[in-house]
Image (cartoon, rainbow, N blue to C red; front, top):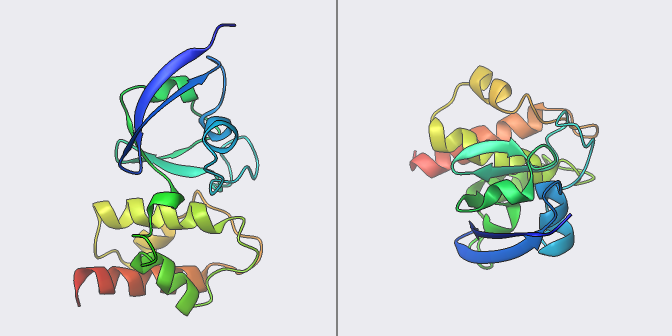
Length: 158
């Protein structure tokens, strides 16, 4: 197969890359672009560890092709912090001990960011539903939910 040239925006930067037509976005991010925050947990879209935001929509990067990203805008975990200043979600995950091994954490953070972009004041039920595509085998979910609630409150300026 011949490579496909893709021009996209990732975390605010214009990026060009060549990939195989059947290459998953997750592999492009990790192996071609050095953006290793998204993790492969399952390869089937069941765990959320590879979550990214594409044109404002939460997607599992293991399920979409890198070639499909031409002209799209992507957000990955690498773009969440502003230099050394953590995003409120990142800080609240630390403050609430909402992470342990770290495999799922980037996916949860991206999913929470996508949720709060659409709903800045979600109920606990809405948070749990919004994060339902992400699996954690270490912390359970209560600390994660509390961290998202605290970040939402902080981001609203409440």
